[in-house]
Image 1 (cartoon, rainbow, N blue to C red):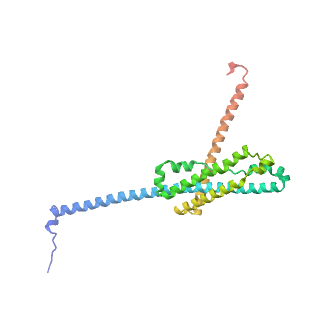
Image 2: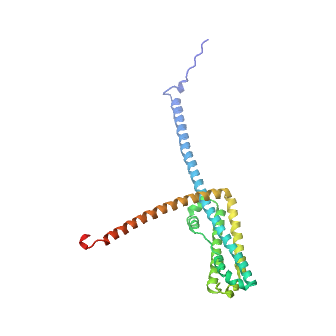
Image 3: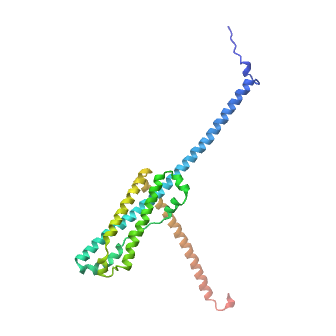
Amino acid sequence: MNIKLHTPKSLKTGSGMATMKQFLLSLLATTVSIVLTFGTAAIIDNNKKQKEKREIVMMVMYDMYNSLKSVEKADSMLCKLMELQLQMAKDTAKFQQMKFQQVGLIPQVQFTETTERIFSSTIETINTVGNVLFTENVAEFYQARGHYKAMVCDSLSNKVSHEYPLASLKGSLGIFYCDYALLSKSYVASMRHLYELCKQMMNVSDDNLKTYEKERLRIEENVEDDQDDLNKTMEEIMQLQRDIDDAKGKLKTENDI
């Protein structure tokens, strides 16, 4: 018994159902193509945003890390000043030997405000990070950093310059370092707390910071090499001009020029 299968007339080429089938297949292919295109573009865009976010976070965390090291160093200077002052108070004969050491111990902080300006000046940067609490903590850290410089370092430096000259024993013993030391400890503790909070919040480890630091140092070394090359080129130009001036100076008359 032979059984023959026949394509239903409704699906034969030229029929309405066949046309509809081809239309649906074409629509499906187009839809899949659009989804793949826009889906891939969305993934690429999201990856780009995540990379930008991480770069901004690492830049800020590295700046906070260096700032914290700077204020901690300044804080230790205040303790050393108090110890030095105690030695001079116990034995005033040591003043002549120790008076110059005081100047080198006046606390100073070393940092630039470039990263702070970049981070806080544009809403786009803040939106890229996408973490309001992190933004607030960073802003509070930078505010504390500015206050530390003004109220501890600059204030003490001005007091030494105008009220208590360290060149005299009276001036050296007259400064009440304790107030500055207590204020310094308070700021350092607050800044360290904010720094650790931000590290945890953005999942930044000490190893991450070390890796970032190495990369920054590598880039800065390349920049210094470029600057050395520029300086060398400029010196060659200046030497050439000196040679020209010497040659012109040896001309006996203006007619020789």
